[in-house]
Image 1 (spheres, rainbow, N blue to C red):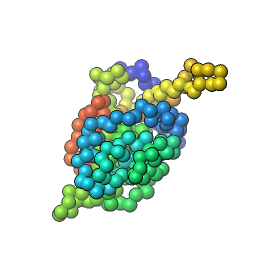
Image 2: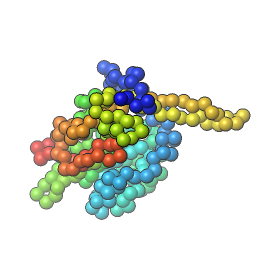
Image 3: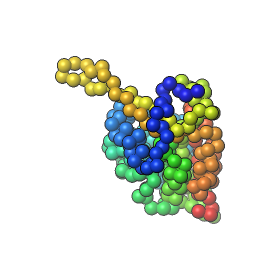
Image 4: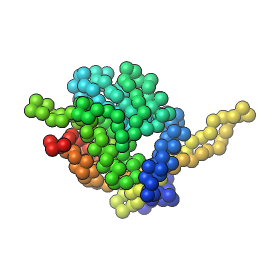
Length: 245
């Protein structure tokens, strides 16, 4: 069953993945940034726990930080946040002393093997091909400190939207389309003459991950899965670099 909230039109990624994502992801978030940010304020428990478990003084990354809501979870760590959307990154800059920069998850500007931890929450599912999703995970893993005799190395927490959402209002489940367009309804600002009841609908591309797919992509990217699970219609995994990488 396909959710009435999702559209199957134009949901098949085109040959030019970069242009497709520019239109159906990046441009959309630029336009809905303020409204989107207003709906994103409460940390998810698994993410909160992961951040609070980090050793005081640790330095980490929030890749695809959105409005930066996770930057203040643990005051004892320092986070370099980044987002592809200039509008969202601008909102995230309010969370001092953390740094926020513009960056593409497929071309991260960070030095390799330097960071104690990283999070990427609800980002990778916006990439429109398996190759690009694996490449994004590899980019994240390469920023982490490798394991040594005295250290377990850096760890990354990745969240993606799940296909298995039978109990949610969306009702997706196995057998449904995994590449979909999800609408975002944006009410127009009031005019000088009064309230504006018109609405504008934007459609964002998502790849819905099925059970086991995130773990598979992590391994394909040269990572090792330490823990994984399901949380509120999302699959998540904590990973580190494989010893060989």
